[in-house]
Image 1 (tube, one colour):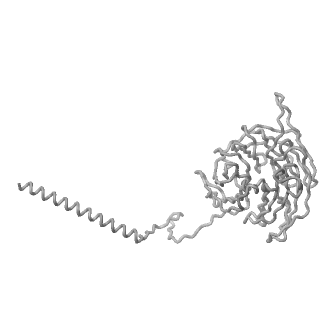
Image 2 (tube, rainbow, N blue to C red; image 1 turned 60 degrees about the vertical axis):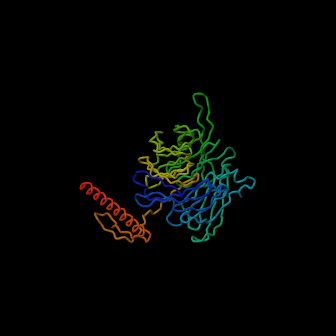
Image 3 (spheres, rainbow, N blue to C red; image 1 turned 90 degrees about the vertical axis):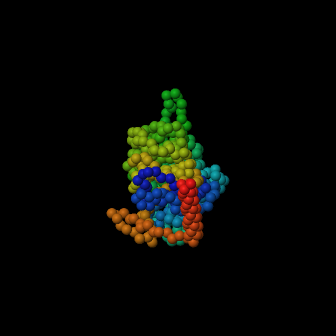
Length: 420
């Protein structure tokens, strides 16, 4: 069974997280009540290394929520995040039959949330070789699992390098891509055209040029696609503003291991970064100032982070097989759940209603100063216990009789001595 460890802290607010691992399993972790403890409530799928989850995206609306999952074997699944039922499975290998799914993995996935109807949904995928696909999935009806693929668009976002990260802005009109040997570039999804490309930084004071290698990227605000932050393999965090210049506006180093995950806060200027050595920190991207590191070092590389839009909580997961929930104000650990497999992604269900379920017990309760105290109930003894107690009482009586006889014999001996 998964192990749950907690610290002496106020506890977790009501939330629901879905984690994805290297064996293709989807595990649901919930925390109920104002001081809940996170624990695993459901597990979907069967262990299979070929179904390793590479990317995930969720539309957590109250009615007809959807979850999109991209796997290592080249398939994209649309799943119901409430019960784990698969609505449709799309094979991305059909785009280029000459390339195997293992050689052209899906590195970016986005499920469009705005203007989505209950009878259809749109998906954006990006592969490591630069193939972008915009899928339109149509459902027969809202309560049926029958679905089909409608019109789809495919275009090339790059012919060289190796793509590793992508992100769609809040308006779902623009997307940014980057990778190894590929500078971050911004695309207009409606026109499928590139509108901006970054320029590599100049050589340092020693004349050394650092090769381009982007590992993660995120937009700073939902209503502004011009500013985004990116993490690199050479432990750098860069801020880009396409309205100002092509080179980074701010660039700073964080520790000495590659940046593996980066996510934004809704305030528009705070970002959270995680690296390959398990360090997590919050940074004010306007000045590049380190606000602080999260207490408690993770024992494995960070692979994914998600910030809750309402609660001051951030979820992180990685290769140490732990899902950790942090308080962004104090940067302390709220709870950690051990999930056995290497975790690759985590998403949060923001519309989760975490009301605590109260169980009814057949015990008479007494209300004392707003606290419920259960009356003690005497437990009846079993026949074996009764027999044991009888034997014990017999032994005790036998011992007491022996002691009395010894005392009597001693008193007689003393009287005989006195008479003599």
